[in-house]
Length: 383
Image (cartoon, rainbow, N blue to C red):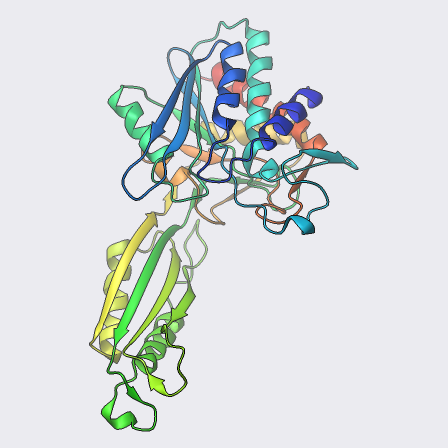
């Protein structure tokens, strides 16, 4: 089993599927699933101003649907010279498997394929319900033509999911530490402040927008948004860019721009945050514009049999009792929670998006066992 999961992971790593490019990764997943009897639908979506993306929805069986969701797209490898091995070779060394996307999250996809194969061999393809996989090539990028549109396609075609497990790397340091049962919301904000251009020696006949912008940002950043809630960390705002497009030392610019992101918990909404930010800006200066982009709302999957099944399956293999957490960044679970209960559990995330991304080979074996235990328990339980 460990060799099979490693082999599939390695084959997926060799597909240089840097978002939004596919390079045959989705088709490779489909080829493995078709051998197990899955009906596979390759779905391509595109719209003006965004790249065409290849996705997969595969299903086997009828009845209550357990869905595994994930992505084959990966972030760029960065400076190749800083890698110990070719990031798209899937090199094994000292008990580790190296490669871009091995943890995030091609390894988890391989483990679920292997777990499903073992589950089906055990149950002779005769079980009460259905297993599906929703795999996108657009999670690391804009996420416009990926999971969100597959879910819309499913709804249109009357395909429902009862529970979903997303294979994102959820563990900070060791396998079995953490299950993600929700996520904070994410709001991008673009703030532009308008002034009057002039010579730096004559500030009285100019109006420096940078001065107003810095006051606004200081007030927004220092605002005590909240102290957290029962299941979520405190909301947090980070300024990510300040730009005036001015290369001259002796010119006061006419416009200054800042971008920032706020990760917010269930005490807030886009509307309430927007209202607060506008009030702060108005208290400083009136000539400005704001653009808000909501990329995810806060959500929480309540404790119940589904989470219990996953937690017990992890404990059975690793001996650990996983923490139930809402920490970290956004994932495609932000789309899925609108359709069904969803949790996230995968490999260790310590090296994701970094040079020399790697996982322990033994963790691929353990994760396969965990996923198989989840399938065994899920289809035994009347949820």
